[in-house]
Image (cartoon, rainbow, N blue to C red; front, top):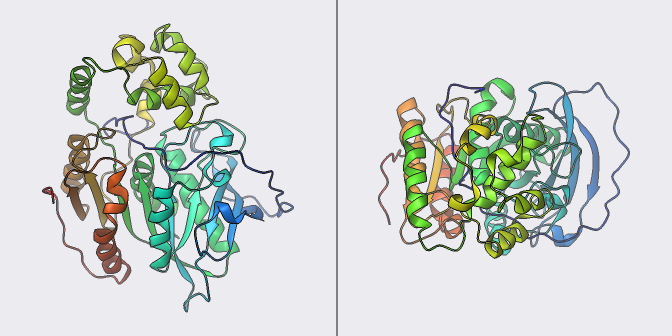
Length: 398
């Protein structure tokens, strides 16, 4: 295990984007300088359909980031940069560093290669109307050469932080005042980015983190999760968590030559495992449904041992964040069950993080995203102004 933190779960992550074919985009000629993390190498305008309604300039940038799999060397990563309309305020637009949810592991699933879903369009348009520009990384290996090490927190954090650096260095309308925002897989990526930032990117002025559907797992919670999953699967035709397990394994296969999928999956699940290398999340979900895959009929008894390197790579480096943390949890969330999210809140509060946790009555994983906007607005206004926020470590449904 790379860090002594508890292993976390692969249960999070609703898909954040609709997935369609991307027209070919011609990048500008690379800019040659001494290589460094956050260095811009190319930029191109994006089609209007790939931006947000009533946005200003929209770009797809390519930049260098530290290889999060190995911890050294540089790799290319892409991101979308969306500016609000009109003249920027004095000092420039502050930034929402957006961490996206699960889309898949194939290059054509990369967020900047596809339009936004209606849900995320509404969510990020609201942030833009608050006066923020959006910088949304695709993560290492999505849309660029190499493996997408799915759910690897260091990969996600380095990609996000270097994307902010690249945007700041190349876009004069932006200001180095940053809110890290993410949902589901991206909620974990947002937490990880805030956790890695003090040592990896102390130059970025992070004011706070807003995350919904964030995963967290201890050995006790893992046991509870597996028991709950077994009970839930009685009579179930498929388990949506299999989609994320297949992507996790595909990511591991890309960098661990010792991984053998037949050691983790039954013969029934192996066709879906192979398909996961190319199918984006909605299509893979359809296949998992059609084949009736559940943990019970898809995973071998040793699956957790076989996937241990990928599970270890999901660990957060610390639960103590230097800036306040907003957590939004849906009472009916089945993708990241509330006990797991409450576990993260408890651990972060115990570590000294200022946590404002909210529990949304009757809402699921996806519904919580936009329902949390009014609460996150008040939180954001306070942290951007340097004012204290009221901590909530034991939220009640409302």
